[in-house]
Image 1 (cartoon, rainbow, N blue to C red):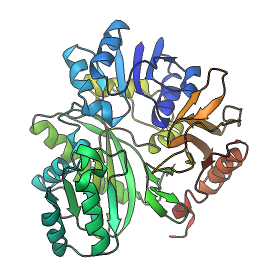
Image 2 (image 1 turned 180 degrees about the horizontal axis):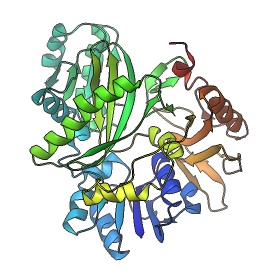
Image 3 (image 1 turned 180 degrees about the vertical axis):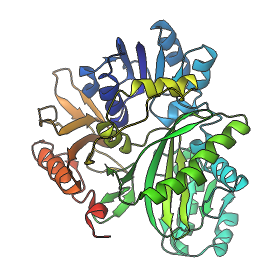
Length: 425
């Protein structure tokens, strides 16, 4: 099989690493890719993930049997639509179906329309109207930019003054067109986790869960980020909660999307809050999470390609049941100093590509190589250090032991990834 993988981050490096292990793969091309993926695939750095027309042409040129879309930006640009029109199987939803992620207003209305449990909400375009609406909610206030904001478009404000300031920032252009509308939600009390399902347009098969760490600094302090680390499995996902989430959220979502003329193919990421009333949807993503994908790919036991292809072709009935290794996988994100607001680019990284042993993988997320071959930072989240262990403590120890061997003065990381799983329940 010839496979085209779209994207350049840590999520896509993990996918490339796993896809390349398949005996079905003859050729794997990643566009645009990053230096870490060069050992697994051909790179086409001249393409951008948002160049839907160019990527569709590349898929036709290389006679791709499957295109796997990593980032949400490519889905929003309608890459899946172009590939579907050209008869190329695509793992990733159409732009219409991807609205579950690309528009929070669409997603909340869909959930409400079909009685799928989530927080109460309102959608606002006017600053004064949004501020006045705060009177309908209790602190803390949850304010979200409607569109895509690279995982940073959510604010949890402790008081009304802070909430009003966030409204002004979002509607004032902080996230560009993504913030032209804001969603204000009721605060949900509980523990959050991410549940994944592979979908073929009519059916959904669960594909594990994870828990990530959104805040930049230890103790869940600092600004929201795209994610500073994750681990899988997550203790919050008890068998009972997973069953409830599948029955109340995942299956009805896939059925109703098909009924509304937007069959969903690809991976559905359900961000869930475990509340006293059961699981409730915090948000949907239309792709694998980042860094959750990294831990899921390391835990997955088997060939990922038949599952991706079955989703893309619209028939999971004959696909193998997903299996996962025993134990726990953790990933720690190494980010450039200044992230998420003003990450420092160009700092030299040494030791990232050494052999860390059979239990550790380092995925590149935001790197590039200078002409002399030196590896440097080229983004906010730069490396993902992933480790497998018999339990969370062993996995964590292995990850931080590997991090200590990487020489990167220009980076920082949290030292407490996985802390929830280590606390007694």
